[in-house]
Image (cartoon, rainbow, N blue to C red):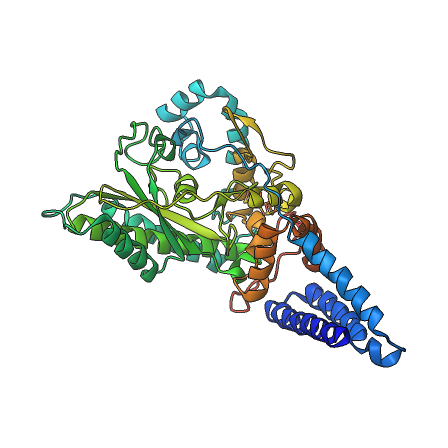
Amino acid sequence: MPLLLYLIVFSGILVFLLYSAIVFYSEGAKRALVITLLIASAVLAMLVLPVLIPWNEHRSVIILITMGALVVVFILNPKQNGLSWPPLQQTDERTTMFSRKELAPESEAHQQYYSHHPQHLQADKLFRSKPGLLHAQAAFYHPFGFRAAEAAFSVVKTLVPLVQGRPSGEPTHFSPSENTRFVINWTKKLGALEAGIAPMKPYHFYSHKGRGAQYGERINNNHPYGIAFTVEMAHQFLNSAPHTPIVMESAQQYLDAGSIAIQLAVFIRSCGYEATAHIDGNYEVVCPLVAKDAGLGELGRMGLLMTPRQGPRVRIAVVTTNMPLIPNKPFHDPTLTHFCRICKKCAACCPGQAIPSDHPTPLNGRIRWQINQEACYTYWCLSGTDCGRCMQVCPFSHPDNLLHNLIRFAIRHSMLFRLAAAKLDDLFYGAKPAAKSLPEWLPQKNRTIGLSDKGQ
Ligand code: SF4
Ligand code: SF4
């Protein structure tokens, strides 16, 4: 009987490894494939061992007990402290890089901003000395890729007139749970990956507008609910970050998220309620904060939303409204941030050296990580893309399939696995995995000026 159990256990492990090898092959992850096949060979040897050498039941029992003990240690999952939540202060959108980049030198807004924030002047001179996002002189300029991204951003701009509007007619009188059920399911039907409702708090909103015609105006949005949703960034495009495909995919997902948000806002207004869409270039809210409180994910080391199945490989949009809705519970999973404390891969691979590699620190009265937004944006202006290298290398970004979902599950449910997983990811994919080559259909004319592909 112990021998039969031994054979069943090792056969199961072998089948799983062969399945993993197929997944790695389909992903083009050659290094992971070779390592998996080597481990599978060792397991196969264990499987045939009872045939090759004199075997007795004691051996099976000892091996099975050892494996059982490992499983017990494996499932230990003491709770670790997460980061402080919620934030204590509102963010002024004018201090973000997306606002600062729009300050024309010599303009009144430029003078005013830097007289209030002289500490930003030097850092901003540096990014202004680089070619700029989607610029033809940028390092990863691609004549098709940059124009494709630019086209998507241009279409996003055409959505702006629909961001706000008046409700039409009398409000519909469905119950909050009926409203919620419809809104969540319809948002997903329109293309969102996940959607949730957050009860809006002051820290979700920027204090002042930092972009567009309302620059400098105080934000007075009193909508009680925020519908946050994610759209997926294609893994194939992320793989070649920080090269051109990343900005093509980012722009496309900003457009997809924007059109879903606009459609949802127009729908809600037609039901007689107020609704504002928060889309690329037109935010009154800090989307990752709303998404966390809508139950969609946790904030990780790189400052992005970490979702359970796609990690940071998502874009977010939000619709705020006074339609009666039922909020989700905020997402709170300290195991994700505990893994970030161990992993640090994004920090090690960031070409702009913008991600902290130490433990979270007190900032504005809260314990958290904060990336160096100036260093990150300066790299964008050098590369011409929105980089995304941190997203690409994150162990949570691997494709949404059984193998990687099992690994993500194990990371969240086993402290031992968390301790091992970051090293295993380095072993299988490389500590600084090289950017994958561009899709075949994109002409291979990527100019580089002094930046190597490997390790960036
Ligand atoms: S790469 Fe590692 S440290 Fe960075 S966000 Fe992902 S899990 Fe956290
Ligand atoms: S986008 Fe690039 S430069 Fe910015 S934090 Fe991520 S890896 Fe660093």
